Length: 249
Length: 304
Image (tube, rainbow over all chains, first blue to last red; front, side, top):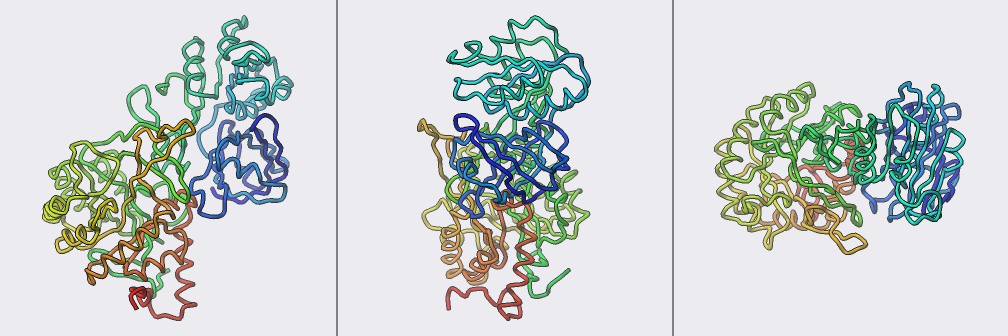
């Protein structure tokens, strides 16, 4: 589970958004989109908690994968200073990801830093012949990333809260006006977005949750959420991906 | 493999080595059993058991702090019956003594849980949790009032089939008074639980849903060392399992030096899930290089 990976590259791709490519044998264990890695941002004991970060792209052939994250806290800012050749201690791959199942046409909906894991998901869906439509929401034009990468995989719509690009408003302001029919949706983003999407779309789907984590592998009970049946689930191991309706949003 | 230089005997506990994971940082061991052989550990302090299942607090439940973290999990656990039937059964396949952490809000609850869980074949001792800072229902703070703590310890000791260690809270004015009030009834002490703290977000609001949480990790090691140092001076014979921020073999030597008999590793299990077996190996190497016959030759060095 724990491995030391080598930084191949690190690049800032939007406001506070960084993309880091890592190399290591453990990449061969990464199969399911929506899983995450738990990164130690410092060798010292100054930061005792690892940071959970989504896997956004898996390149098994070269044993490389990409993580995409927002550097808006002390830990992720430290991570953003890692350079090519540096070593990173991480636990991976963790969590239960998105099932990649056949369908004619699916809707992929991302909000802000929830967008990254959807890229690997869309790649895998396209690889088995599923048509994908992407709806990506951001606060403002300076926050947008991966638009072209998604466009290369299928139809892509952008929404910004301030209207500086694409549709003004939220992802639901886009999905409300879509005419095609979709077999299911896959969403990742803030809880309010997941709730709005789940409520508004009549189709079945999957949502990926975000929660503050301690251990990342089911031990500390920090990242629990409530299931519709009243029991509790751990976001780190039972999730982060859950079926629509399984979790109280 | 057993290294006799590391073996430690305490009431109820024959430890292969003095290193064990601390309660709440190891769940019930199953997740770690996928990473390494749990039989390597000196003991396992399992997550707190209460009479009824507990859902715990609202999230966020954790926040990082400088060289530490705050938690307010709220004793989430499936209840003592479930723990005996499932979690403890699972651990029976390993050659490792279990120390069961017992929690509650009423004396009757503690007594009931202690009576039941102490009969599980692999539970060799209890850790009486009178000091969880995150559960306030009932309004009783067993861990900060010497008289209440003494009464509770007495009742639990009577109900238990195995030795009872009392986990002391650092959130008191006089740690020695607390230790003395329970020390002649209990079979041993575990020191220390977390320190109450809080952290704010950028908008000046508490991050934890519970507002306050328990501070753990390397940040609290100096506090714990001092408290054990104080207690050991007044109670030369009481068995003490020391904990608080252990991250290296040197940290373990520090705890032994102030008078602890064994140690528990908490928060660092999250930072590095393999830390316990790594520290056990490192400790064996250190005993070799220090040229001593037994790890306890270092015990109490701080007083010389």
